[in-house]
Amino acid sequence: MESLLISACFLGVNCKYDGGNNALPEDILARLREKYRLVPVCPENAGGLPTPREPSERRGGGVWSRSGRDVTAEYEKGARIALELARQNACRAALLKERSPSCGHERIYDGTFSGVLVPGSGTAAEKLLAEGIPVYGESEVNKLI
Image 1 (spheres, rainbow, N blue to C red):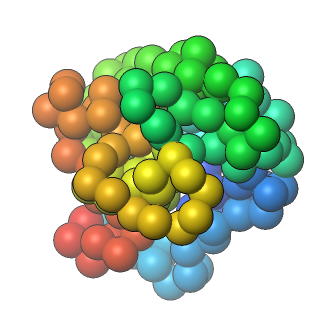
Image 2: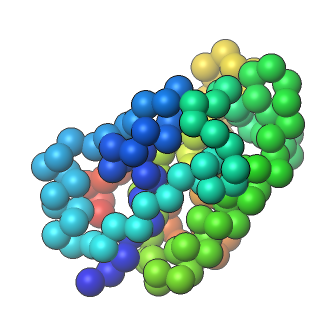
Image 3: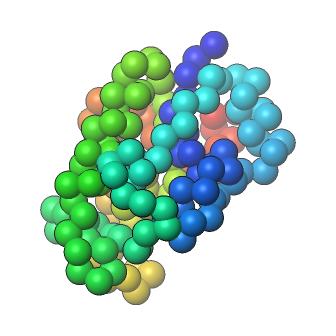
């Protein structure tokens, strides 16, 4: 059975910045579990950030919290850990939270905390993609089932 790296918040883990989760519907999770061994990761927690935590967005080459704290090091550490998990578990793909500063791919928030989306990827998605591991967002889950 293939392994799939998956955002822990999709599995109901309360690791989202506001203390909640982004749990996928149980029927979708069941279908994923039939096909893959799910390898959960929350790059923000893995990088040392607490839950709940202040929202953050990518800007320039870094990641900044809403109050202006530079959290780039934590996001980079979490990205390295996510990549290592994917390698250790021979994950052929990743299903990650869209628009996230760590997990988002193709479109992320612009760093102004105004809800504007721009082309780009989060820190973990970027590392996975560079390694040749395809990244899918929740709107693309049917491509994996």
